[in-house]
Image (cartoon, rainbow, N blue to C red; front, side, top):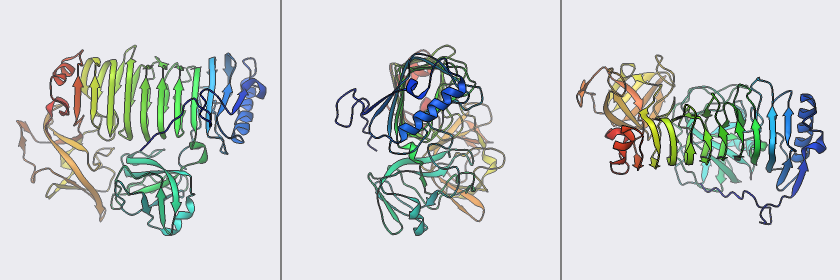
Length: 490
């Protein structure tokens, strides 16, 4: 997937020139205004912005702006698709009600939270540019030129937005009889035989499973940048959903700007030293942290494709946990505990680390699944009733193509053997997971003994160069490139 981002150029290509320059004070916004008046001023700006085209800059004069609800910039649809909020010396405050949003989220951007704005499509392979819908008439949901989300494999079974094992954003080039063609080829293969566990309702999103294509609301197709703002402690995360979302020179008292539902999320020279840390949500193609400091970063799932980190020193009580599913690059990261593996769902992908320092290097996995929950069908096939996981656990480890591990009950890690998930299907109320495990699985492997547990592999492809601060980093740096975490053989 190509990302062509012109950060500071007008339509004519001239740097630092905007088609529209607006001042927040002209809409009634003021440090001296009431919270209700500032939110009303923001609503007036959003209406004006939606009617504009080209690149828009909103200047907010320095000062502290109180809001009666969350500040939600660029929340309207319309022609506008590029907004830079220049707000150096500005502090935004709002109630601790969970509504403090930097940019459009919570239904204003991204997919619809229902099961009527999506369509299933027949198996489509990586590299193809056209999909065929299972129900031909559902092409009426989609429009040429609009952006959509393609997703497959439900890793969570609930929540909004969904948590797919595979996803990508595409722009529609043309629509045929039951077919949709995109401007770029697919980066993933999607199967129509993958299990579906939660088809959603009129007020909750279809979580997917088999290949699904989702309508994205118009405000999603924007470049949005927030510059120079301090976001005060409001007890909740700051969200920003859009095609490109960038935070530059911003300060966050607590949780920081949560990446979710974007083609590109970028943090440049931002600081988030508060107790909350930064949750990496889901459905982001690429995340970049450049010269930033967020105290704690936690990947709750592998529903992120690419990660790039450069010159990041975390403090105080620093922590990094997890990474993206397709590729991770860490350059000059300095942290406390660096934990491989996702907090909950999926597996961390190929990882390159150079000149990184951590006081502790380990593996974190919140989800371990008793092997006794599964029936060995033969030929490496495991089965269980229902889904997305056996009744004893929540979460979902069986993502086709990913690597997993068998662990004993002696504690973490207790590593016995690695294996790969080859496919997953459903039939007759049972889920069938095809792996390359031996049949039957032996009771003793590499000196470890059953009963076994299953978990996602911490990192099956790990390259470390000149990393230090703990024995794991030092040992791994001496190993060849692409060696699995702690030499956990594949």
